[in-house]
Image (cartoon, rainbow, N blue to C red):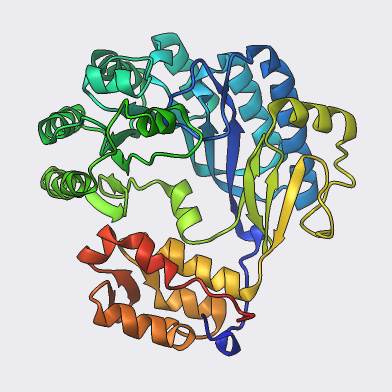
Length: 411
């Protein structure tokens, strides 16, 4: 439990710039392991969604006074599944509603099966300057198990098409720890990934999420429970192999070439302000966390029939949700300091002592004296002159470390 007497709470202001997240809930097919707020077979709702998204963007731009936007991230779902004309219109709306910085990082998640030369050229022309492509594996058998709608060769060709179109900042996502995945298959996927020479690679250990088709299959015995020890070996192999090939690990699950980290995701990890728009999107502004309703159909209905930019202002009137905002959580100092530690410790640089003290008025060791002492003795964290950070062993046990910083101030 944090020592709240030490905390001088100073949440960052959105006037200094925000990250902007747009949630696109559409997929051509939904993968059996996915528990995100995404849907297949509702293409008839796309036009209404785009119009409502533009309305929400304009509303927030007015409410917040058109603040500067440092990064934009189109996630999902499958943003690359949207018609290119819709993506162009969305980008134009963003630029009219917010002060998008000239150097803003603008990322779009992409499915390899959606990539064509014409689409890639349109995405680039609309302002997208970074692609995050969901490859997951370069093994066709494993891609089938994951329900992906592309082959390994199609993923490689999609990457090349994007490069030829002019994208100089590409990231690929990979998943390890899959049922039946061998160490050799993982090594081959790393080989193929490195050979493509992307600027960024994200690696995620498969999580069997309750309620997903994959969880049902695992519980029924169709697939074995993933081997945690083998997954740990795969992670450690990736750390070595990527480091040998010019990548720097800057976060538990992320590696990049020099100065090409995901600037948008760093906003999350530093617990800085961001706005989320679209069905199910989450926001963190002015010391409050809030989330939009999840149903795409309800989202469209609410925005088009009930939404008014003049009264939709949960940032300054947090007593009840408004418009598409369905849930509001007022962030207490105890929650903010815990979340700052939990997210910041994911970064290899750790939690900066200077930033922490500026935000909370005290040092990490003053706010979390017993936690820091215990974790240091266990060899899970390290204290340097500049930061508090995970040790090499601590990266493998990150969730256990993060849990130490969660406390109930009423206990």
